[in-house]
Length: 442
Image 1 (cartoon, one colour):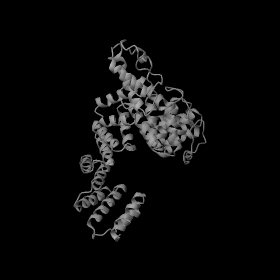
Image 2 (tube, one colour):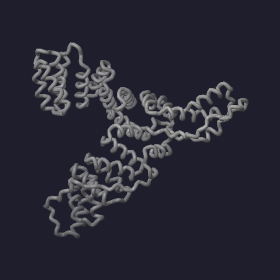
Image 3 (cartoon, one colour):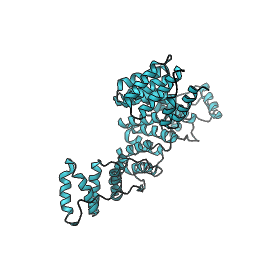
Image 4 (cartoon, helix red, strand yellow):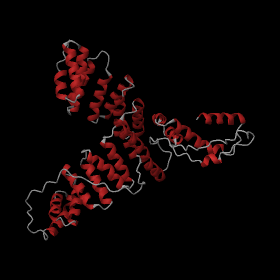
């Protein structure tokens, strides 16, 4: 291995390890003696500049890299599209990401980034298509599934969003955004107890930000757990000194608990905001009667960083099992069925399900399916979900549904749809014999 190759490989290894400075130091050592390797090294330098927020420099470096390439490298195109994405130059980003896909149709990240560009432009149907193609390329594309779930939430298609989040959490058990989004869904549906359960999982991962604690506080307020609510609001304040609604609720709650000095601290902060100034001033005047020796010049007490929250027993909206399948059943009753892909559930076909009369001797008797229809199929309704996906043009989701459904689920769903159609229909002898033979083989 020559010096150029060694420097390039070292830079690549350092980049993959997340050591951007080490990677940059290695890539700049790739000399002009190998123009191809220098161009590829330069593309990585551009990517590092993008990750450091040096977007103008990144654009120049990546364009220079492309100009040096006799045969265009799709990854360099992707890096340039990504640089434009971070600059919010949507048309330029879309152009280079689409060109990446043309040159390399299996470039999953390019589909994901393109979907994000399209979503930013409110071209949601196109964005959904891009994310679905990413999933077709790679069933484990966590970010694509998460982004798709976000669009579903925006469209209030909570059932499909939960379906995608189910896959995300299976693939990446510690992917905090999935738990946050799932909590947001429950919060929107008014199931604040279940929302708190999801948000607390993120807190336990130590990945909570100000927005997460704000949501948590709102849900604790909704179930009238005011003490945990105020602690959540104060954590939001600790992480974002300008989250004024959190100051307001924290002040109100501390006031209610007669924690006057802590309430005073929050009211004093609100004096800086015109929207809350009058309320805060009135409250401060009132509180000074209770704490006349309060030092208005003192620095506020620091909010404790490490705070644990106790999720409540989950007894609302969904039954106590709280499996995702139970959630899906509950949501179906609220927002209607047949709208999206199913959750990945184990086969639940009734073992005693009878599709035909077992009496093969009575060949002249008409086969009736009333009895079969009474034997309820309890599995995933694959037919409905495939039909809904086709109707909405989500062809990638059709592939997703079929890949993640068992043979029993597919056949059970088909048979459950055939039952009403075949009720009281005379089935020819040859077909009945074939059905009987197939059933015996099962």
